[in-house]
Length: 159
Image 1 (cartoon, rainbow, N blue to C red):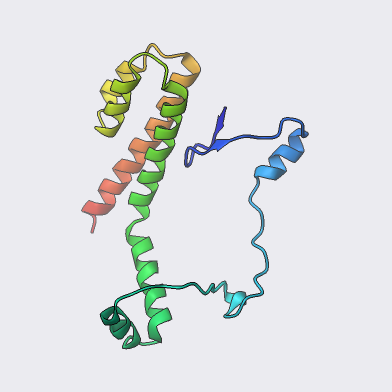
Image 2: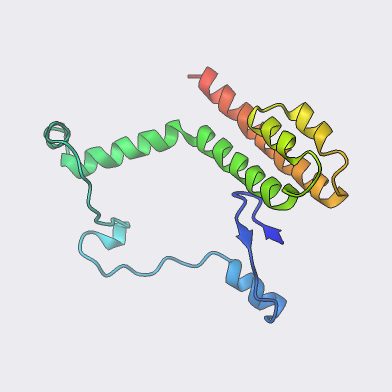
């Protein structure tokens, strides 16, 4: 099994392909040209948003209109949640890996609980008898997760 370390997604290459073809398949593709209405050169995409009348009233009173106000709100929320988003992705990567690779291993349930309790010392002790490659990779993922948690904590305290 192959997992993406950044998000825990399982990757299933077509092993009939050459190494170069497999790598090309999993490389990011350029965004397709958008021929829809709006401002495709700017990357603007039109979608439907459902809000209450009071939300529309507030948005329409903002400088630049509703679209500009929504873009500013989303950009601010994205900046404010960078650390939390990174920690959540790291935790998901650990979760997916431990669940798929450790589900049948001894003390899996306790290790899984320790992960969500963020009791990393207990988690480390519980997986110590697991197969070396699984244990070592899980430890690397957990180390990345704890770094992201530390950064998130620093970001929250620095505000």
